[in-house]
Image (cartoon, rainbow, N blue to C red; front, side, top):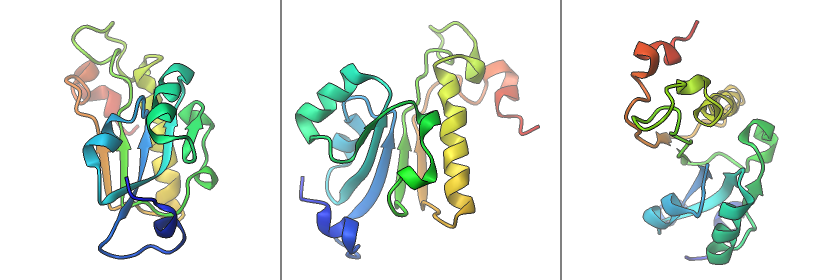
Length: 148
């Protein structure tokens, strides 16, 4: 992939678009996006997955910690795209039915809190993509997304 340093310091319209990849694992979303996308932040909690990521991409933009430990100050700039492939075990048909209250799938909540914080700061991504997992919107008859 083309070096992102120029984009990071001086965004060049039409050449590359910045994105952040959360719950990155081995970087599959990054691989799928390819050029003209430039990953300016990658995050995963799992050191084993991070080692696979590092082997392919290096680690200049990689932060290995729980998404709940990140603040907007940890995220560079205003990305065009934010990609989140949060764990689906508690939501999937094969999972235990805990929904967004589960230990793994519940990581969606701190991720979304981080996105809302960025928006409040005026750092609004143009696109936020969440991995499509069957059961995400219907978990607990939709109550997992009840704003109250």
